[in-house]
Image 1: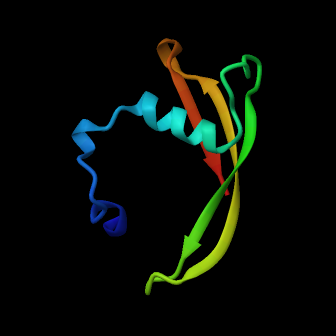
Image 2: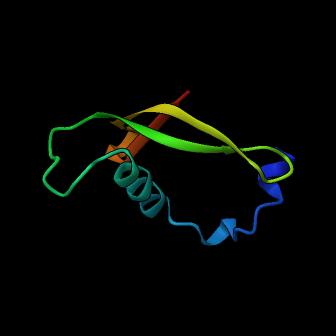
Length: 76
């Protein structure tokens, strides 16, 4: 959690819909993907010294949460 807290984000300014859209685009969603609910996103991994350590594949599932809002589940 400390690593995430050290990232240069202004968390109070993040728009969850924009974050979800960015992840979905990376997983292959397109504007015409109306009925698509699952996909795979490639996540580049780095070592603590900044050297590349390969790529991890994560499954992405889009569902509806309470109130009809989009919910994104990312699993390694």
